[in-house]
Image (cartoon, rainbow, N blue to C red):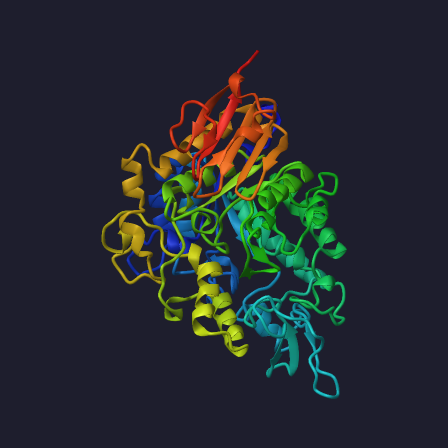
Length: 546
């Protein structure tokens, strides 16, 4: 069975956020030569592919997700020669490179937009432009994901343009076939350089069926642009005309996609995307939007996991990325930091699908310890602060809301050692480094055989070697507010206690045969089962062959 899997189903994919990974020239920004210098460490971890967040030319309104030139490397990260060297050096270590593809929008500084606002052909309709009506009103009531109206007036053209995100990120017009041809050229350019595929940013939003007013809600207008049939047609065309010729891999960030939407994007007969990211399991303690907190319940987490594990043939298994809080701070406990970090590793690597590990997750990096908004760089967080101020939310509560959910939590520089600036740069870091780097860092963990890093190595290998973990069905067994138990395939049972208190296992005795099992991994070193599971304990059992 394992032999029939694609390469992206068997490998660990490691996400690098370049500006925060490693600074080689001490200018305070991570770069491509810095990545090359750490490839051996990533190989030792078990990485089989690297997803690289954007390194294209960008004015940096949204940390590189506002691209001004798809065909050039931003000088802050290095040169095209550096990028080509990264691809080659990674290949020597049997590590594939996946680029970030951001094609819902460009930067407002992109040549296409600058010519479009001047009505220079053929660029006039590369973006979505609309005049105001005779009363000077906005084209419609759509709202941006970064708060406020999704329309911005351009003095040069004398019209409004659509931006679903920041006003410096104008949306491309996919009703114009020239745009689709431009994107095909971008795909070919990078695939010809030897990359293995693309992570596709908010890919399910690219096609706007209509510009009618949206229904009331947090993101008005989404019914006209999220998961539209026109998006499916475009993805099929890109797959047919370009991607299939290179056997290229694609994983989609599908914002606001439910399970049925995901099934459509991943349907093999439709030939669109190989996988999609789902973040429902990371919203268990959130209400409607990530900035409104509620209580964590293991029961709810297991129900969501089971829904997606059984709903899709193959999942992208993710606990962290550049937009999510650090998982050990989110679902774990800093009081039981090591145990909960290892518990979360067991959770990730015992789920069915391709695991994505975000830089620093493998050493248990935590949320930032900033003290005020002056340390914040994230445009989304800055906009949220302005919105909360507008509604007269007290400063202390505003800060609590921001610190819980800010994207900067995951963007602090990677902690390599306990020296100056965590061994990351001799310059001034672009974003403040978490002060716990003296305890949580790569050097400490590589030197400690019982560290979180070595535990990740162990779990990565266990998943690769055990066919039930790689391919087995997912079945829920038991859950309550803090304890969850599930089975993988015929032989694996996983027990996880998301609590600072021990939990009795008496209720599980009729459901599980503890006598015919052995513990193959735990985060406490436990060798045999008992009548209770410790606080923040995680256990993987395997049934003995009869």
